[in-house]
Length: 81
Image (cartoon, rainbow, N blue to C red; front, side):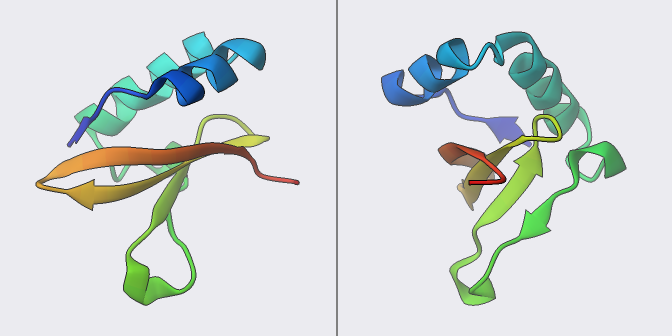
């Protein structure tokens, strides 16, 4: 499954938190096999909204929805805040 390009705000977040390499590596893995266990994909609550997340590293998550067979990033968040 392809991941759509990030918007400017999301790109700035990645740059500010020095996540570019980790994000790119994770996205490549996601596009090859979005069921890979190291992604830790979760369906978030409330489940009827079909919003998911996958792990960039232990601290950061990518929140996304699936539209037209592609993952659209909604946010990149600090999992512990």
